[in-house]
Image (cartoon, rainbow, N blue to C red):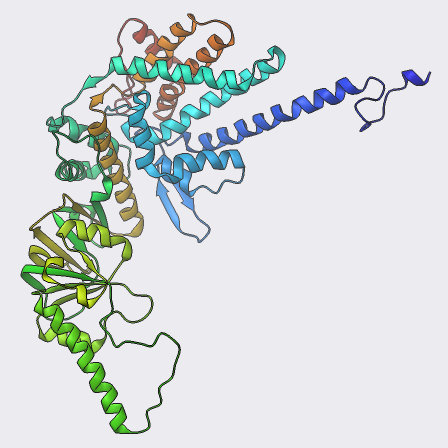
Length: 523
């Protein structure tokens, strides 16, 4: 009979009972998209899972230009990854493109993720994405269950937020207060962050350098944060990492423009943003010179104009002149350089625009945009400005003994090749972020997977006090915490199942600080 005929594929939903099948397909579509997002984000986490811990492996990444980066830093790996899936790209952008500093700043806000020990602090960035990885797996299970039970994804999100707040409370109770006057603890923390790096063998040099740099730009008694922009890292190719140094002052990589002046004591430093060269018309015009007299007049006018500029600079007492890089025309003509050289003024040209703020804060000078504003009160002062020869690998200009220091320092990073220098810079930046974490939140907890196992146990107990799907979601969050000790054990060559079981047993007996010693491959 006609009413018993099944509707054709693609027929309208209201035709002869076909509505149920069509509605089911519509409900299934959003779930498939969620599963796709979870799988893509999990793939990103799997790509860096093996980098966790001191025994984690380095990754060799080649970008579109053919440049190679070798690192085990999670943020760098995520930043270099070329991800196409939108959800995975969002994860890699949030955790990678913000850089290590932003990620560690979040770790300070959430003590749940702050773990300082001889094993795991260097891997906090990787840790954050690994947590996401395992939570994604449980989200997948819960969302599949929600199709049968009707639980909304918002309930999952709210349950995870409740678990996070409880986790912060648990780890705050576990934490041990630290004073910034305890230099040994600060050094151990910085050394920890370097343990899993390529430059780990130089931690005895880089750790004190990082601690000293942070302590020089803050007041330990009142500081609640550290502005890492006050610590400038200057990379200079040549030498070895042993040649890295901390300079209390300013280091400029640009060479001194005029030869013969390499050292100036009692320096009066000016910074100009205008050009010391012949003026040009605003429009593209041509000037036709018909005889030598006119040509001679043009040259005399140009000479007089530049000489007047140089005299005004000399009149202020300036003996070191920094010239900002110009894209419109030559910032410094040969004639101006000749006059400056005769007046014994050291000249450094092509100062980058992004360095202006740091230079001004360091030496107390002010940028001058016009010669009429170039006065003595716009100058900065320092005890010594000296061009230093780096044993055949170039030169650096060091300005030290600033009269009104703005609490800034410079770290000079040396290395035999570009890869070593870049990895050393990332490692120093990580160490600086670690000390900044301790300035903002002056507390430590054990590492080596200890806080994660403790969280897993305590959150599991907490989930039993809840009811309904909320309890199930919090339990899933607690189970996800165990991925950290499991991955640490796996990367160290241990049996992850027996290791996590033993850790769980120890923590159940009250040993809250028991973790994995990856170096000695024991618990």
